[in-house]
Amino acid sequence: GILCNVMIPQTFIFIGKSGSGKGTQADLMADYLKKIDPEGSIYRLELGERFRDFIKKDTYTSRIARDIYNMGGLQPEFLAIALWAISFIDNAKEDQHMIFDGCPRKLPEAKVFGSAMSFYKREKPTVLFINVSNEWVIDKLLVRKRVDDNMKEIQERLHWYDADVVPTLDFFRQNPAYRFIEINGEQSMEKVREDILKSVFPAA
Image 1 (cartoon, rainbow, N blue to C red):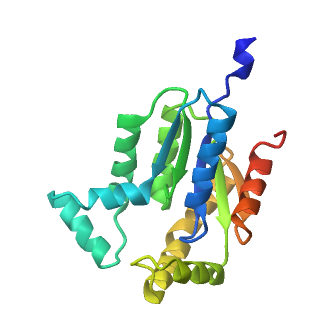
Image 2: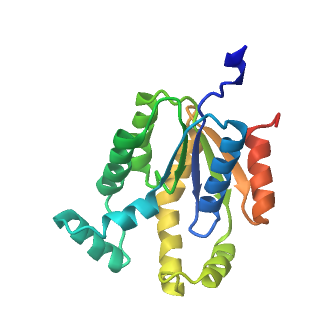
């Protein structure tokens, strides 16, 4: 009877605009999984944070990436893929829940990411798209006031989102290998969390 309590490892991909609250919701999901599966282990990848650590290094590659970052440019796909692929290779363990925040973003990345999901036999990863309007993002980010949150850079990030992330969303939405769930992000953090849990664990 013990086997009944073993939870099938879950895979979650949080995707949304900068300021949509996806990082917070990824954290809340990790907390929820710990509660319902105290014995389970969680692999959590927040690509932005991993990237910021990478550009602090003093290698040829990290220096070029740092220059691109400081100019507000967009990093090439190969670098994003390398960072999360190495993280998988070094840190992923069997039977873990997996939570991804901020990756994959571009369409070529999503396709390579799919090959990793197949390799690790992750069946039907759940894509949680936290949908918010540009107006919502601008209000949120200007209040949050991170160093890189000025109006020009926010507009640029929204432009990249349309150019790079929207095709990725369409790819996930139309791909039967993924479970795609769209959540209204223009609500309180608690309400967004409640909607996510209801959609993901309907019986809970």
